[in-house]
Image (cartoon, rainbow over the protein chains, first blue to last red):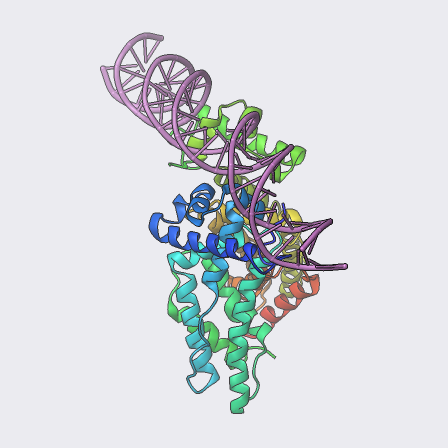
Length: 191
Length: 191
DNA sequence: CAACAAAAGCGAATCCTTTGCGTTAGCCGA
DNA sequence: TCGGCTAACGCAAAGGATTCGCTTTTGTTG
């Protein structure tokens, strides 16, 4: 009942090794047998640990997959620089939508939300997006662009609508939608 | 593998009775033993059917709970009439947030999204919200109010941000946020 | 280096889930 | 109204998944 996957009492040594081995096993098996065929005993065997270890640490297959999914959702690079906020934000939104609305993206998104009793992993996902947006906004500020929206506004006006449609109305999302949201946000339909 | 919970080939008779009995059993047991203690065999026993029946019809505990969750999320009455769009929408948004952000609301929301391979139930949830909004907007139109947003805009600007925060940033949501989103939307920070 | 405690290993018992096969009951045409 | 047809259910057995108590390992601390 204590999913201390991240707040380890003993960060160094065996606990860390086991966590790494299990995560690696999930990655490998996702590719080999597919997301749907994953089971705790299977993962445990591949990781060289006993199933009970996994159950004690994560409590649940879903919580384990939630942890792993968050890793997949972590952005790997900063948003590209196109010289002005409007372009940066539009490009970022488009890429974000493209990644999140893909079959694997939606799968990871669901997993992340799913096995997450305390909403911890979900918060992490949101934080990733916020970070990326922050980079874009700071860059614009450094350029001297004015009347910038803040991060919360971008989350409300750009990220939230995309997420809502991905989760609640799958299908029929195109890049133009992302660009439109970004454009409207930058144009400052606010104030 | 065929979750024909809703598109029954033989709507009348036994199939319908079984579905009803199982749904009723879920409702009763949710109250008695709590969401977390639900299992297929438990539900089946209460409903007077065998577990294999449940597995064949719904495929999965999660899919069954998803179906039931959608029922909980269905609004029971039309939004209250306060004489003008701004007030109607603000009140509706506030109530929506209150219900969805409550512990049971979040639980149903998660269940509905979770056990839903084809995004069918999720779409249903969105449709409920869209219906409510449509009622509010038609009412405003009938009053002669002008420059009304359309349903899609309200979904983007009011519903989506609330949902995003409920799902990805649990905690710290207050009624004022809902009213602010509604007000901004009506004020037409768009176009 | 010794004592302590957290986490992992092990194995048995329990429970859930799947599956094949026979039976029942709603539906349809004569 | 009466058979024939088939989807859906019941039953039971087999195969996994999950839990739990206990022992052993291992990292930390004084």
